[in-house]
Image: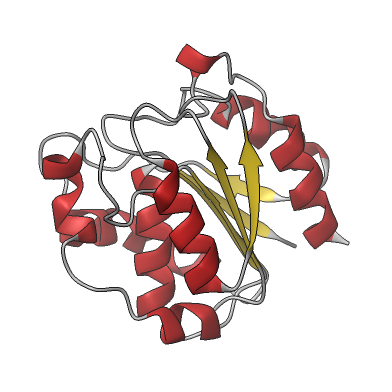
Length: 185
């Protein structure tokens, strides 16, 4: 069984954006889906997020798919950096990795302030997909371009998707679901 983690970003929660819809769609396909609540904005540190993620340790297996939105994508990279196993796939949506401008830079800094171990991240995941919008008002598109380059991943670039959140009318995310389905077969 494929275990899927959907990870929210700064100020986020499991019930926002396209997360509930995607959880439902993936459960219909037989996946076990987790959408954890991480401490934010108070106590938003990698250490606090890793403590929260620790309760799911038994579900983090080679059959895992990580899906991270915004800072959740950055945290997914940190999970892979620390992992002792290689997972199926990671889908990183509108994630900040340090390329300015980033609207929540100060809040996100504990996650992006130290260099990423790209070699370790690539080693611990079989396939990466990076989604970003050219008009993202919170995380500049340069982050998506650099991330795709560092991961050796396809950049799925959108023209008018904003930050892929409810404000940009993203309460469903068909393109993401279709890409995920390719990793479930």
